[in-house]
Image 1 (tube, rainbow, N blue to C red):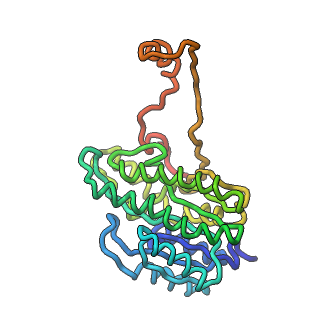
Image 2 (cartoon, rainbow, N blue to C red):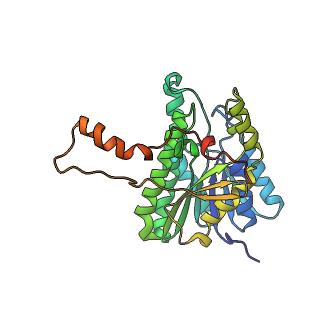
Image 3 (cartoon, rainbow, N blue to C red):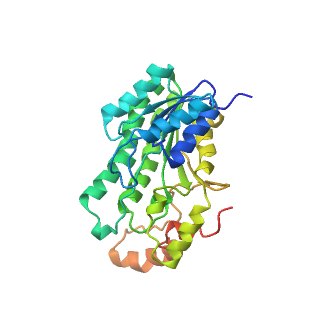
Length: 304
């Protein structure tokens, strides 16, 4: 039986390790030729190595798949264009982009450095924009294509010490929705995946409190391979009717996330003052205000 990506080409960023590696391997097993992009950095974005990307390419070739390595940085627009060009020059086409690359530089907001803020934004948001923009012209010409962008519950819900990462990952949701809206006329889809999986990045989360230790132990039961099926599905034509959505994958659970919409309203013909807002609007809204929660507070049950 043919795979869902038979004769298609997929570019996966950050595909040298962890979740990206599993996506690249499954995409290849489903019939895709894969451009395996990975800069080979450490969990905090330092250093580079061609080894991780080359290793994944070798794994794919070992089971008869097609793959080529790319070790450029997605933060460079020219390099992003080069990844797309490499896919087309090597395999003759490009059908899907999976924006997965990333790293963490966690710090409490009031102690976070400007460099920690800038470097995370450059990869997780600007880098995703660079690769998506580079692929957009080709997708438009072909009148088809799919983007899958990785977001995080750190942005969708919240987490301590991740102002840089959380804001970038919530920005990815806005980027994905904009792409979905702007490119719908060209049959180009764009969706987000929020992964729950143990990886090198999760391994950097502090475990100083009992609650943090419990959270990390829970995450360790969720393997990176569990994220790949949803991602490959969204990249394939099996999801031809799905765009502008936010999904989550948590072990054997799949989630569809809500998107911001008005939930309550109040109105005064004479308009509002600060005092009438306090007297009338606040009591009407109070029961519906969102609690200040972290991702672990919302997803508090053991993964199944």
